[in-house]
Each structure stands twice: as C-alpha cells, then as structure tokens.
Amino acid sequence: MDESSANRGPNHQEYLLCAALVPVEECDEIREQLRPLLLPGQIKFHWTDESDRRKHDIVRRIVELGPMSIVYSHLDVRRKKTERYRRKTLESVYHSLVDMEVFDLTLECRTNAQDRYDVQHIVGLQGQGLDKRLRISHLRGGDEPLLWIADAVLGSLNAEYQGEDSYIAALRSTLLIEERTPESLDL
Image 1 (cartoon, rainbow, N blue to C red):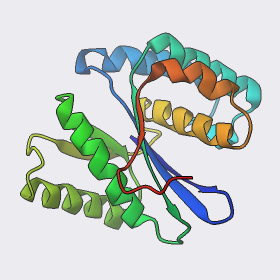
Image 2: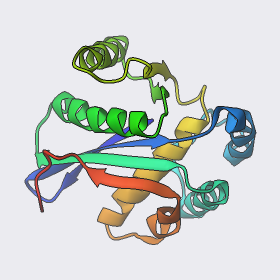
Image 3: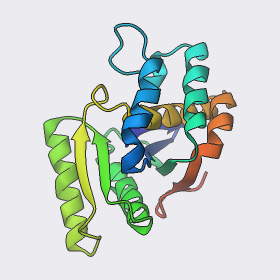
C-alpha cells in the first residue's frame, strides 16, 4: 500500500491510500513482471520522477496484470499534519480488506516512529472489534515491487486532478474500489 496527499483547490486536501491486492501465489510472478520497468541504476520507480512515455509504459504493464487495486481517500480542509487523515483512511482500507478476506497488508515504510504508530493504530482498532487476523508489515519501496503499483495508481489519480486523465482512464479498469471515507467533505 502507498499513500499520497494532494491539495484540491485553495482550501482542501485529499489524503489517498491505494492497496494492490495480489494473491500470495502470484506475488513472485508479478514482481518479475514489474522489475523490467526499472531503468539501469533505478531501485524503484516513483511516478513524479518518470517521463510521460515511461508513465504510459508503467500503466500498460499494470493494466495487463488485471483488476487488483483499491483506493480510499479522505477529503478535508488543508492541514500541515495529515496523520488524522491517514488514520481515517487506513480504517476504511482495513475494513474493506477484512470484508474481502484479505488479512496481510504491506505498507511502504515511512519513519520508524510512524511505522510503529501504524502498528499501534491497528492494534487499537482490533481492540475495538476489527478482525485480529489482519496483519500489517512495512517494507521499503525498493525492496517490494508490488508497492510500485499503488504508487502509479495514486500518481494517475493526482494527474487526473491536474487535467491529465489518460493514465487513470486506462487504469480505471484495474480499480476494484475507489471511495472516500464516510467523514470526507463533499466538493
């Protein structure tokens, strides 16, 4: 799972999370299909650093993999600190995953303190009734090619907001869920 936070107009901010749902038995094969997208010397790709041509290549590869991504977002007023938005969005993702009987989730690493906070958050939610089978782990983007899928989907959604919709138009067929949290503002 990857995250993005983007301004939406002068007063609003959207916090987005995308999870690529990959059956365990297909993980290695899909990783091998993604690795050739790397340029020489590149550890991982990051949407904002890629050329338009590369973005289209990345999108084509993800579309070939088929439907697999869920996106949740939280739209609210702009704030410097987005952890509250992250928690609200994560909670929606967690419940959706449990409903789909997906119990293992890999998040892209942030800082050690932030990663520990993610663990505390899920433990707290499990204390309030969230299925205890749901487990999270954190990996660096360069160590887990499956995280690149979420990065590309979120980059495409942000590009759409900026007027470039060709990427997400192609990727929409791969989205299983695209929703905002119940507490989100309406635009």
